[in-house]
Image 1: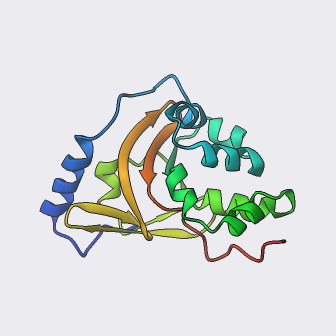
Image 2: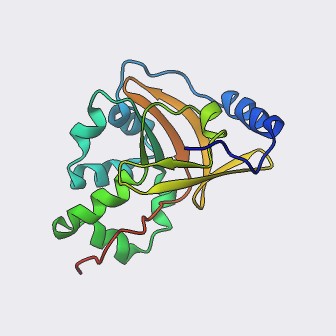
Length: 171
């Protein structure tokens, strides 16, 4: 992970301050899955995590950083693609998609804005961009940041990111 060279330090600090001001209350006693369930806006993500068999991993010690797509983000995925991903025969592809949203370590917003990329647990890297005080991860915009959990942090995004190594889905 290298420092983001295309922005100035002032812009990075400004974005960090913008995000810090929107940080919700700390949920230090709840893990990433429990925080997502309690939020109520990640029902599709939680269903996908269950279908992929990743609940225990996301409840583990961590720390982990999750770029979590909301239910509205999942609604943008073609229905046939989402249905195919949730089929048991496509569990490995679903895992690949979900792990593409997870970074090892606790990467707070102030640190995210200093990066140009981040390696995911899927094995691929996410491209991080900061423009006019707004942060994007690949083509997803970061809507909320620094939602704390006992085993990491969640940053809310407005799109589901699909990895290049997804492979073919069974119908």
